[in-house]
Length: 85
Image (cartoon, rainbow, N blue to C red; front, side):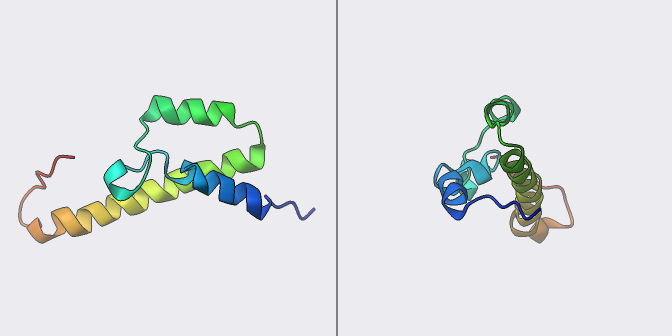
């Protein structure tokens, strides 16, 4: 079976900002907390879309945390990072 999410559906999801649900707003995401993310996940009835969104959240959060560390904390490797957002 070669099931794919149609390109126009993926574009609609992107346009809504759902690929960045838990990404902080200053990084271009929606900045949802865990409850907001769970409510969106609950509302998505298509399994393929739900898995796609979950993967983007997991990967996106890891990338954002890595970028945060490199660009904000990285220059201060000798001490703790005190940046608050």
